[in-house]
Amino acid sequence: MQRGEPVKDLLSIEVYPREKDNKVRIGSTLKEDTKLELVNLLRTYADIFACIAADMPGINPKVITHRQNVDPSKKLVKQKKRTFAPKGQEKIEEEVDKLLTADFNEEIYYPDWITDVVMFRFRASNNEAEYEALLMGLRLPHVLKVDSLSVHSNSQLVVNHVLGDYEARDKRMAQYLQLVTTLASKFKNLTIRQIP
Image (cartoon, rainbow, N blue to C red; front, side, top):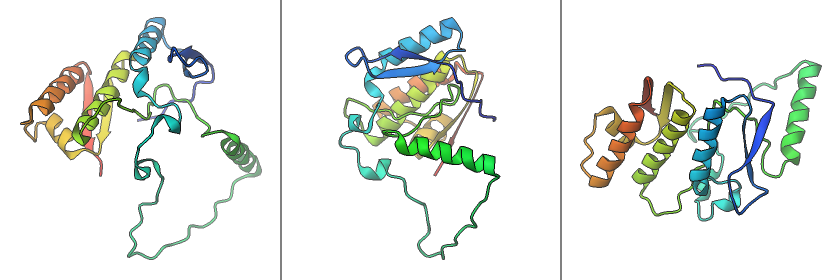
């Protein structure tokens, strides 16, 4: 699968009625009906998207802290320093400066490559949260009329429910599975796999 190029011309839209400064940017090249559906979807679910770290109180730092997945029993190896052509080095330094001066992080926009933090304003078990994230991950591509989708989840339970390898015995899990199955059937090609 090839990642698209970033869209330079973006439209700023108000998604949060009480926060005029908090806008979401979407690709200007989207078809008008797709744009309208996307804006409606974002406004409908505006309360579950986090714009800044302060929107996510109570999240365990282990969830949002970057760390190296290193086996402590192995000897560390220092990588060789990479050198770049002067023009490339200049561009890298320019981009790093942008990141350093940004308040949170400098974003690169790939309207056809979606990732975001999803926050739920209701109590949910880990498995319910995994299903909610999966549903959000299916709704947005469906609105954008994506016909092929590859889903990667770290939830062994959810992935095996969807693949039919596990039976959803719990009533709530069965309801979630039904919602996912219904939404998944709207894609021509959908694959789901567990990642560790």
